[in-house]
Image 1: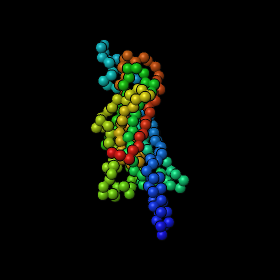
Image 2 (image 1 turned 120 degrees about the vertical axis):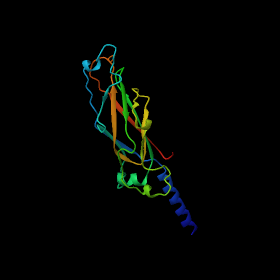
Image 3 (image 1 turned 30 degrees about the vertical axis):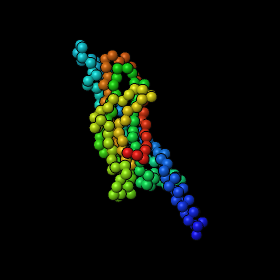
Image 4 (image 1 turned 45 degrees about the horizontal axis):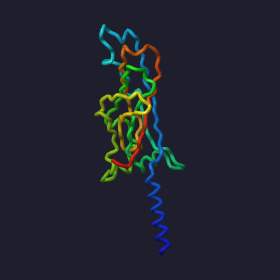
Length: 195
């Protein structure tokens, strides 16, 4: 009887220990807006710059999603249902020319929960809160840093999510040299089990 009790306790402890690890996932990014502006469109009148007008992408020109990677016979859907984490998404750009401001935003509860319904939704007390998405800056545009070592939080959400639209706005300046630029937008996802 004593051996059975020790084996049961050992099994439960090992199960709890394995579930305490944050599982690996994949960030999927689809689409990216393309902006073109002629010099004539930048300088409208002497002393006036285009830095206050800029270009806006379509609201859903870029969509991102984050789901847990499948493990052996366990699907992403099952893992996302049984392992709910708080995700914070950070954004930065690389290779943007000087005198250009890139901004990004999303809206409250945008995208789709994955899976749509989870065991977590039925809990009376949800330790991390509702499975919702909260954008930074109240859903208004935030400036995307052009620095490989600095990123800004654009949103956070509870549980896996798909098809989150990101809208971009670019504010070029007449001080920016003419040319073609390939600007990289980088996303970083940080998962946690705490508020």
